[in-house]
Image 1 (cartoon, helix red, strand yellow):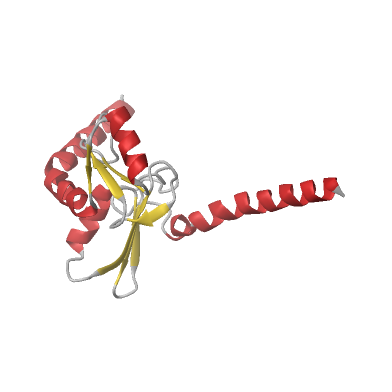
Image 2 (cartoon, rainbow, N blue to C red):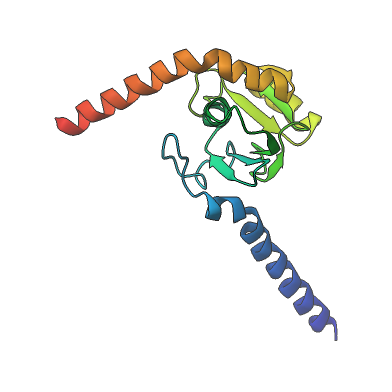
Length: 169
């Protein structure tokens, strides 16, 4: 009888483990690649952003940088859902409730000055202790994305130019 309980536990654990990625990947299945840079949103699950607008349209981006571009281009739409990948868990969390870290030594996605989201204050503090940066909120993080846009686009263009040159040689 004891082995039956053990088996049930193993089966239940396996079902739970398998169910989580299916649920977590729903936004990635709907929007597999970033519409602005083409990056794989599954590979960048830790930084991805999911936006849903008041007209029930949605977009999935690889990063806060690309989400900021979408928000700027769709100025007449109101976002009703803004979710971001938690850096540690890769699960989508409410971007406005997340604890953000701006800067630090860990390279950002599509930006020189990283902007990372965490589901808890403790996780953000642990990151800052290890990599540096400034704890902030969503408004400060999105503002930093807009402020960094010129330098970030310049950096991306230069990287892509270098990649094309390497491929041509």
